[in-house]
Length: 277
Image (cartoon, rainbow, N blue to C red; front, side):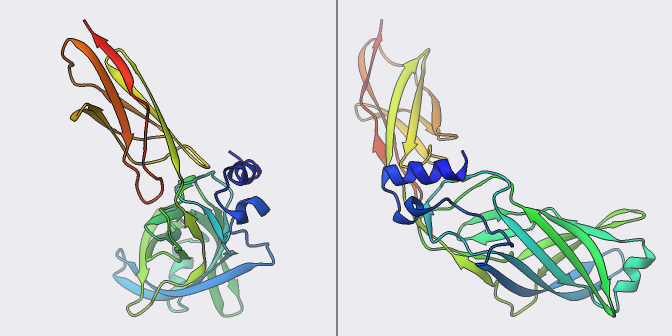
């Protein structure tokens, strides 16, 4: 789903006034509202038994003030520009091994209990006596975390993968002791209300869980026959397909209940009548 459609849909549902006013935007570095966050990381080159500190800065647009919790965000909507200093004492080693570029496939932003994956890649750049890694990237698809006001902060760790003449060399980097992950901004995430419907066919119950702004992306559905649990299943892409326990002969009224979580509210489907002969 594109961002304009998200804005219109959430406005109709009345989830947030902010979404009614504009599209869900990414963290694009070209915006006038772009913010920069910096942290110092300690990187270890196990192959050479060497470690060095690097100051990494990430620039991107401040997140939208509010959005629906649990919303699935498409790939390519969030952009980051990253610059990391290379220790002058270590820079000649990169040249010795023919390293002119690097990537970090596991880079991204921590957002509450969630993670915004933004793989980045770029070149090693020399300017005077300064050597740095200058990279850019866009997000892969992800789901917004649960309700709250999480900050989008730099990651606690990532792997700098240097492309050498001998192949890729992974260099793990972690926040330097005493460092606190810095933030590009925060976002208010509102829990979505839900509606659950159910149908039964061939011994399975399919529950469909729709939120105010999107299909539910997580949570559990429990199926009751009276007070007896006859099946459970996890929601994926708005649906849970549940294999039912063997039912006795007679008429049964099965009720599927979505239990909800920190992103989606609980809801219950209308009873489904099943006759076992």
